[in-house]
Image (cartoon, rainbow, N blue to C red; front, side):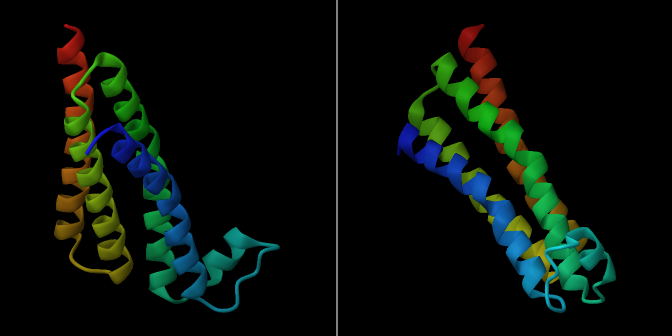
Length: 132
């Protein structure tokens, strides 16, 4: 694994919100693109709302992850370490979204979210330690 793997992971993480929004739109009544927020508010299927929440959460976490990858690379952190953390992050984020959409236990979703968050924190910490 190397930086190319990490960069592919950044791309996957950037695209994940669109997976969850597609699931949200497919989980309700016929989608109305003229009023997407109003359409979502009128949905009675909780899966549509959970998938939308997974989408929003994916947007929120993308920037810190991408920045962590870039900072780690710029600081000279080993490419294999950056790649491993990136792959783990993406796997945890996919699992997080699947758990969210399925409506499984909140504790499990929080545990997976935390695991992905720890990957990002380690990327930043590794970068800081490398330049210290």
